[in-house]
Image: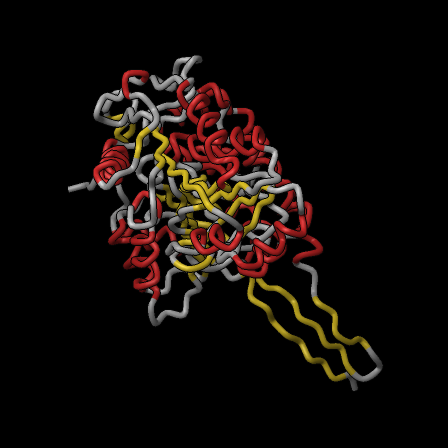
Length: 459
């Protein structure tokens, strides 16, 4: 009997997409084809590979109008925001622009006696397991550089966004990327683990939950297959006394609430210096109270449903526990049509502390706690009081101060006066339970390739 994967739309709870999962033999055959195609793909010039990837990215953009509506049906993002093509293209374009220099041999010596250099070889078959919250942008982070570097790619998307992998692969095939070089697969978690344990892949990139990352690493144990992970987050923002408070409130609250709070590097907790605390909270409440929660297909909707009812239930439970422990909710429930299902109202909490999960454990929803702090020292201590470390946002007029604070924060990226953004020129990485590895930038190519050293003694 064929196993099926279903996408339940958060818009109305209907089955939006249903896909058959690959059998064991079909999954193995997919990997075999990818491995057979890799050598020929790598033998093509880097210029040709770049050209084909660029063309595939452009083709995806030509479908953007349809893609935006598909995303609303699959994971609930309002159509008014126009999808992900801007970031999708920005990341692919940057990785293409640096490819030749990033992948060039490192020349050590070329004398009468020796030529010594390090070249970067493709790893082989790369498995990319992409999440549902930003399914196009997270996928292209690895897909584009992996292909440009000469790898073949097997793409596995979350069950909430099954059409995304199909769209990407269809676009790349239309422009001439061979069928077996980039494949989209629907495979169960158990079968994925079996493939990993069988050394089917030469590199694995996983974006998702901590539990999912643990499963990936356990499956790869003893295979020596590199596993790069971006997992949970509890990203903090800190507002100092010399910050531009209007910009800080606008940006941090957007960073907390955009995409219904379902952002890998979204702001989940905010620390504000005492002198600005009341003003910050008042402005934040005014912004959030003006949101429109509703059907993401309607133009006036600014906040759509969460991707699945169970995600909303987690945030409701976490928020209720905080309120029960003394947190003060500031957003009036009467202003929002929270249906008790996937449609979840936004919430701002004060009177919070680090005994509450809402300030220490990932929420991944439209709730944020705001605490008053006395100084940088207290803020740094609180920002580091977390299992996670993806990004941190510092708001100050003094860049040296931001750098000094950033040096003391346990995180992968430090932002000054911005947040919830991924700069493709910088390494995207995390620490602690957020995972390990690094994507994008020149370092991203280092992870997707294997260094090979040459020590040539001349006659």
